[in-house]
Amino acid sequence: MNAIEVRGLRKSYRGHEAVRGIDLSVTRGEVFALLGPNGAGKTTTVEILEGHRRRDHGEVRVLGGDPGTAGRGWRARIGVVLQDADDGADLTVREMVRHVAGFYPEPRPADEVIELVGLTEKAGSRIRQLSGGQRRRVDVALGIVGRPELLFLDEPTTGFDPAARRRFWDLIRGLAAEGTTILLTTHYLEEAEALADRLAVLAGGLVVAEGTPATLGGRAGRGAKVGWREVGVARSEQVADPTELITRLVKDGADLTTLTVTRPTLEDVYLNLIGATR
Image (tube, rainbow, N blue to C red; front, side, top):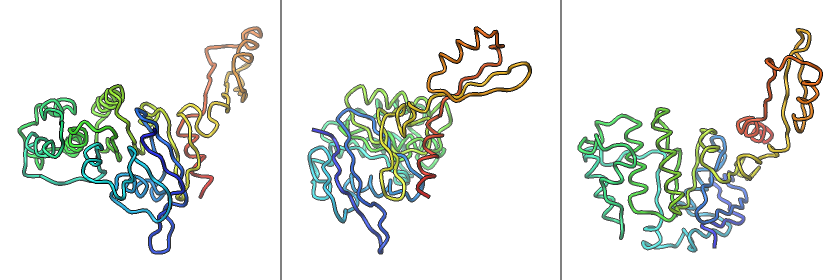
């Protein structure tokens, strides 16, 4: 059984159809990234999956239950890291984590969670005294303290410095290795490429592409652009496989110190996909 099954999902607001018939499947233990520009329908879709918003049409199963009617037992099996959370500002980090842990049947120890998100030195600090990135780490701690089977991460590393982001990536990889299913929304494409087993791109309320980071939007079949200089003149050629061209250049005595091989990045593919819908 998949962790998430969505068929024909639709949701409208005042006559505007924000989600226009989405199909998605996320297997258990998978890290799945949902990408898309602002207004694409990502937040609405995730809120429906979390049980925080009702759908208009479609079938949705999350951990075998309907999020629209699931009860407390189902909610104890999921973790949520919201994009904006600002509760408990006068509590210390440890007090807040312990408080939320009390809602779950078998939570992780509070200090273990605090260490996982890199806040051990701030455990006794009040949340209102933390920086934006540190508050974001508290949000992540609250999302994982209940040992969720399925973790929703909505823009989890906003405000993180590069070092903190890399530590967070290691945390997510560790959770995935333990069998946690993760649904990630992010605007950082390098984050999606580093973490996701598969991903989907939403635009205009529709899934416009789905696949692995390496194959999304036909990325694997787009070949490479080979560049070099020949008698002082810049040359380039787009090829499916650069091996044959490079072998010929070697035989011709080309200056290989100028050789470059460029493949389309995930960002290139993503911008092409969302641009085609505008």
